[in-house]
Every structure is written in C-alpha cells, then in structure tokens.
Length: 156
Length: 156
DNA sequence: ACCATATAGACAGGTTACCTGACTATTGAG
DNA sequence: CTCAATAGTCAGGTAACCTGTCTATATGGT
Image 1: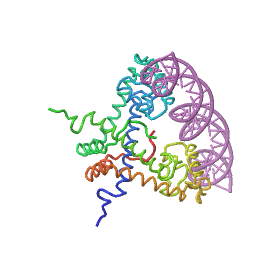
Image 2 (image 1 turned 30 degrees about the vertical axis):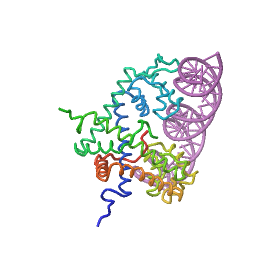
Image 3 (image 1 turned 90 degrees about the vertical axis):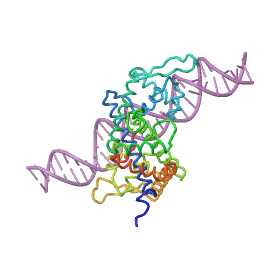
C-alpha cells in the first residue's frame, strides 16, 4: 500500500511544491529580464520593474516608493536617480506639498513597462501551452486562492 | 457575452498568474527566512540556503558550487568562507585531486538545512490549509507539469 | 617522459546596491 | 507661532558581487 506522500500531503509534497514555486518564479524573473533586454532595454534590473509597477499606477513620491519596495529612502533616491538619468522617470514638483516631488513615467518608462508586461505574458503563455487550458486554470485559481498578498517586491 | 479573459486565457490571466507566482515565491522565501531565524540561525541569507541544498547532497567543490549558484568562483569562495567561519561547512582535502577541497556540512550545517526544510514545509502547509487537499494537489501537479527546470538558485 | 593547456582555488582591487546617521526644508497641529 | 513630523539630501560605511592576475595541480598530445 502506498503512503499518502504520493497523493496530496506529507513533507515530500510540500518540498516539491516549494521547489516548484522557486523554480517557476526564477524562470519568470529570468524570462522577463531577457525579454526586456531583447526589446532593447539593457539598463534595468528586476528591482526597477517593481518600481515601475508602482509608478505606472499614477504619480507617486519617493517615500511611498520606498515603502512599496521595502528599502530605505536613501536607497530609493539612488534607484530613482538611476531611472531619471536613463530617461525612464521624471521628477516634477508636487502642487500640494512643497517638500515632495512626484515621480512619473516618461514615454520611455511606459515603453519599458509595456515590454516587461509582454515578456511576462510570453513566459506565462509558455506554461499555458505545457499545462493546457485546464491545468492553467487550476494553477491560476490555486495561486489566487493561496492568498499570498502584500506589495510586489524583490525577495532577496 | 463575456470575453475569454474571465475564463482561461488572455493577457489579464497571464498577468494574474505572473504576480501570483512572484507573491508566492516571495512569501516562501520570507517564510523560510523567518522560520530559520526563529530556530536560532541568524547569520544565514537565502543565498546560503541554495548553497546548502547542493552541499547537503554530498561533498562538492567550490567550482561546482559556483556553477550551481550562477556566480563567480571568487564570490563563491567568499560565501564558503562565511559559512566555514560560522561553523556550517568544513573544507577537507580531496583525495582524488590535490587542487580542490571538498565542502561538507558540519552538524550545525545539517541542523540549519533541516530548519530551512521545516520552515519551508510550514509555509507550504499553510497554503494547503487554504487551498484544501484538492486545490493543493492541483497546484502541485501544475508546478511539476510546467516543467521549469534548472538548478535552484537565487533569481535577483 | 615532457611540455602545453586546462582547471581549482587564492589574492588584489573595483563597483554597486544597500545600510545608518545627520542634516535642511516644508508641512500641519496645538 | 512654535514645534513635532515628514520629504528628501548628503556623507560615509558595508557587503556581495565583479574582473584581472597569480600559483599549484592535473591531464592529454607528441
């Protein structure tokens, strides 16, 4: 008689899921990175993508971005400067608060964000091809049902 | 008539899966990190875990570890020194090759590896609780069917 | 047996992405 | 009107990576 390890539960299954998640995430990050590179953006790192994902939702401040990324204001200022220098982001005065400056994407920043979304979609569509519609739908609903929430940020 | 975006395919679904994978991976890394910390190991980073995962499979050399982690030999040497200094890893002469030294886990290294596995299992079991056995099994098989392969290493 | 080349690892030095701490300017509440 | 809180900057430090160079050992061709 087989043990339940071969079915649903047990540490072996947990470990398999853990490594699967890590591999899938690594494959996604890598796919986005190379896809963005292939589209001509060779001066952005994955961490910048997480910054884009906030800024593209509308003008933000460096302080909010720092909280979103989970890093200090100083590190954020450096990251923003990098993006400004390379023409992805623009700083403009905040009409409502003389201390802060609003961060907005330039046209190039929007293009890069779109490139990242396309690359992510490509990678994920590759999984859908392998899984079939049914398996893909199962993956999708499992991911959302697992309820891992919080801001999207680099993990290590 | 609803569009197929609400069913299986389309860019929206792809994006949802992408962010779900990233969030789940981040939650796992975080869960392992805090779980390992709670078990008394406060001087290891996630990257060390990927080193442990290779070394725990049997004695290795720094060169093989470098390739496994996808970093240079120099960075690997530094990482290994860190682990040796803190009593997780031991260097011993390679009987078959006078140039290389074999890396093996100490008792402390084994204990830390086990702590990481326990923490990972805890985190994954949390998902199983939310998903139910059926959803969890679906997640498991989707992850393995997606066929993302390659060595387990940090992605950014 | 010998030499050329490849490989394992160490040493020196540089880059960068983060950190802490101290500072200025502006806001907002009592 | 002051005073604490907040947005951002400046100065300096740390650690994890990098490239380039070196020695010692191994290996394959002549």
